[in-house]
Length: 428
Image (tube, rainbow, N blue to C red; front, side, top):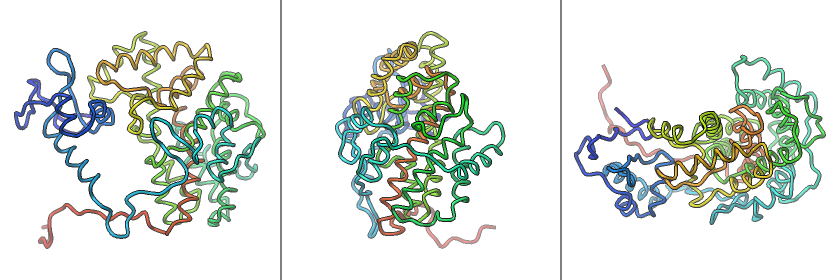
């Protein structure tokens, strides 16, 4: 039997490793072996890099010694190895800095920007370093019509992210100038592509006007409830806070595509292809479903217990870049506290965090905050992923623009072959 979260052999019931019979390590011993704080050990658990089980008597957790040693070796190898000649060990970027549980867009506190500016204005700041007050993205009807026709041709069970991917491809085909990678051309593409993606989603309410802020138009495609100003402000703030977050998996995919000089539509498509992973853009949907279950059951305890029993991480908790609280979650929760109908979902989120803290002291991340926003707004479990995808498209464009200014094909790592050494005889 294998642990569903880590892929390692499951723990034996007697508290020792089933393969070697070694005593299991305490949290303190594990932290010392890894050279980290005990809180970081639980962060490894939350990211699925380390398995754990409750210690006898229910106090603390224990860890497989071999698995801990393997993680320590990986950390030493990844942290100490130099990049091969001609390869990039890190990617220089002027866009987003994350440090001390805060993050910044071009040096400006991102939470402050989100509190004072709209999604379109924040996108312009990230792209150009200039604020354009009153900016509203709109798309020509020809681009919207092509994207809608392509998305409407999908099967009924297709999800919003499927529609976004198809819409991006259709919009690219309809643009004969897509191969122009100059900054002005790419920015023109971005200002059209983002509203085109939103327009390709089927409206739930009356379709928004193309002169409305993008968050207003997106609301009509996510919720059947009329939106009030506090709810729209919360959605717009969520979009602002999710615009960029350094080199997340989808952003790295975008930069690889841009390094090969793929056009902006193709680079965005590369990002859209990555976000469906449950450890990235789809994590918000998992948190939404868990939150709804807690609301239905009336308590987080049985829901969290079932997640742990199944060997799954608790969605919406912990983030590898924030030892403390995720500033995006903190900002969204503050806004949601001013929306009366969000109170039950907020209480359920706090219950989840408090219950899970008995197992691992992790803070809520932006996925849990998004879940509160979407669940309290009558949106489907797919809504967090849709919000994430639309928001992050602006960040992907910013990273593509940076990469177009770098040496082509620099995002080309060298594989470290670990298979059998040649020559080997031909297989029979």
